[in-house]
Image (cartoon, rainbow, N blue to C red; front, side):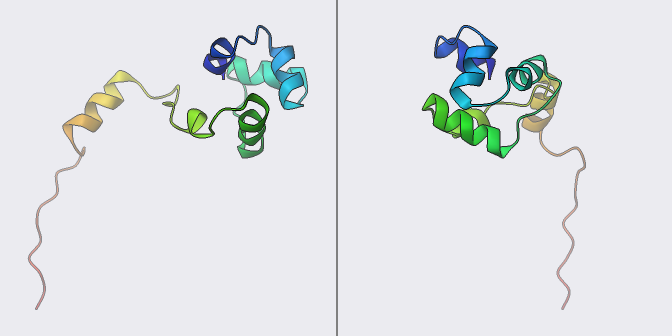
Length: 87
């Protein structure tokens, strides 16, 4: 959300709240990471800011670390063996 604000030159949470028609305190909680916006808010962001909803859905989770990304590139955590088909 903060990245969208910077790219769209929205200078405050209050201005963002006005554009998407939510309480400014709600936006403050989103920006502080105390709440996660639901689909209704993502839709308001999409409509109010005129940007694709994919913009918000394709960004990595803040909880995702570089170690998580490396593990994903290395393959599954558990190795599986091929099991012969039953006849």
